[in-house]
Length: 271
Image (cartoon, rainbow, N blue to C red; front, side, top):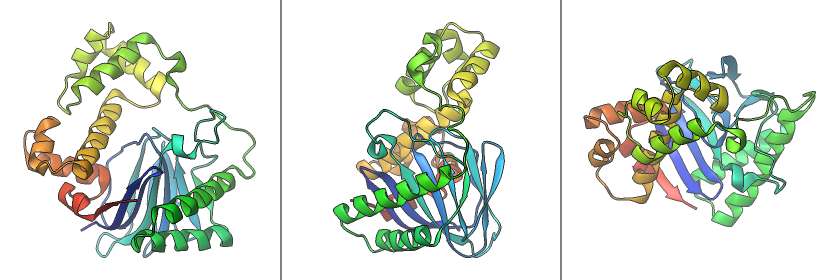
């Protein structure tokens, strides 16, 4: 069974060390996402349709809102991975440039490899906040720069709401306000003034993902927030998000996060 050895939440986002032996569903995050292999068999991360081998000689970088999933190659003992979820505002250089990595799979240099091993050990040993923030920024910056080496240009910009159609903005507000996994997306389309086919086409073209995936991301984020910031029962959190049973919520959470909600709560610390 997949499990977390350490989970930390902080201003930077989240840092986790996982033992994984199960696949994830296709999902996305608001954060930038870095995945490092630590030990065991390689894994596969599919990023926007590109299959990336997750091995000891390379890391996988995923941009905010970029669809991806994880597939292990060892379904028994599992393998160990160090995973970062990077808050784009925390990492921002201050010039307004969004966090965007140059390529999905990038080779690890000896210097980066030493930083990765050191950072994973610090997370497992519950290092102090100041030490963790400083070391994390150094590691992420190094991965960011390495991902752009020999990449000819910055590529297609990330989806932004700056020029988003007002109807898509309205649909997002409806999903954020209702925030239930069982919301009728046909209702969202009608309330936004769009037919169902037009809504789905326009939403994907302007956000980069489907309405269903966007909604699942909002639900997953809210579930994580409630698990780590409240003492609400796991079942109550699931019911509040529109799941008809605790088992249904547990399956959704495990398919998107890698473990049961109760395990996530038990292993989480703050820095």
